[in-house]
Length: 275
Ligand SMILES: C[S@@+](CC[C@H](N)C(=O)[O-])C[C@H]1O[C@@H](n2cnc3c(N)ncnc32)[C@H](O)[C@@H]1O
Image (cartoon, rainbow, N blue to C red):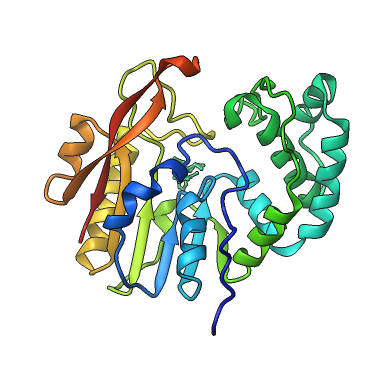
């Protein structure tokens, strides 16, 4: 079936570790042709949205382990207009008290939860997603003068793009790509460069060394079946050793090494491919 292209599609969330700024550097390494695209660490989905624009006819399978995130994608796919109206209402009411009131809520219908999720994402500190031990979102409000909370045109074009995608709540380990027509892009929580960096803390599911090793095993198993596999991670000896034997490329990224924007510096990250 011929799909409708979505040239204006881009991430509708701010997401820690989002790949929008790195895609230019990834382009030379993407495979030329594939029939099925899998992105099992979806987050803000920067690479997924890139392929929606340039490869509308590829089948897309996107997933993540974060239930609030996946509920939001499903609501945009299936119920975008009611979601837009709830989000416009959040936009009208936004202020400090309202933010903390919404942050303390966890009940409601799926659409109410999705609208709240986008609202908090657009107004919280740096678009972070972090939960306390009870599984409640606990990021403080960010300091934005006039945050754009509801962008109806973007949400509608995301909804169109999602019509041809299969969205599911899954761990990466459930992926069922199995041949050379399949392309899988893994963007896991990065292995930390130091014991104080907390970029791995995206959800209640923490990604420790043992998980990085299991992911490498999944990468190797898929590669051995002929699947084209690509993975991003931090540039450190541990990751280089894990993927020795595969192709390892360096890309250059601007990352905050602490919370102050002026302390952003260029560091290298790794892009690893099986092909
Ligand atoms: C680095 S972010 C992905 C960023 C994304 N590529 C983007 O452009 O915004 C990592 C994602 O992996 C998800 N995640 C963590 N553990 C997972 C697991 N075991 N299986 C699937 N997703 C997982 C997190 O919820 C988070 O959304």
